[in-house]
Length: 221
Image: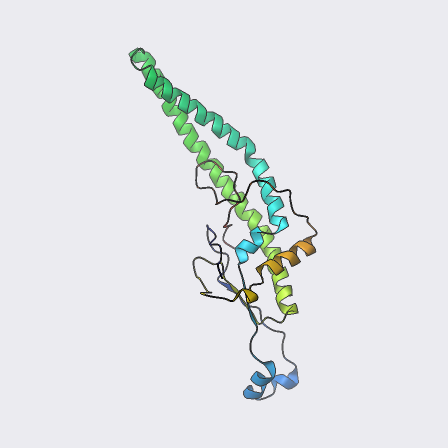
């Protein structure tokens, strides 16, 4: 069974969901009798971050986040184009420019590069913070759905098979993977339809400007 490794910090190593409390009569029984009555533990696996990111709720919130940062992306693109133009002028006109003109253009280029660096870092920091908040908002509600689903289906333990920092699951039969089932249950409960299909999801942005990508690894929880 193959899981997608999600960038950024992992949400949780595993989610242990305990079975309902035993009745007084069963609790009072001898340990061997209790174990026999309870039977073997029922275990399932889920890719928690992958599941949260795959819900209609998160996809819609993510699309809204992309729209929010579109003006900033355009601003950074314009600034980057201006830097490229100045660099080209200095390269192609170097022989014809006076020392004063060359110095003026060089200073303008340096100022714009510093502005680009500051603006890009600020935009990226804001974007990452918004991404973390967006993911956390959905993850909290998704955990409730997972808890209810696991109890309804009698799972004693649910392990996170998509955690890259602490890989709890080395191998799991696909039959015990409940990722899609819980995502479907969450979508039904939320009542949020799937957003219109756009570009295929990609990795989280690593450049100074917030990229138009669907992060595979939302923030730590």
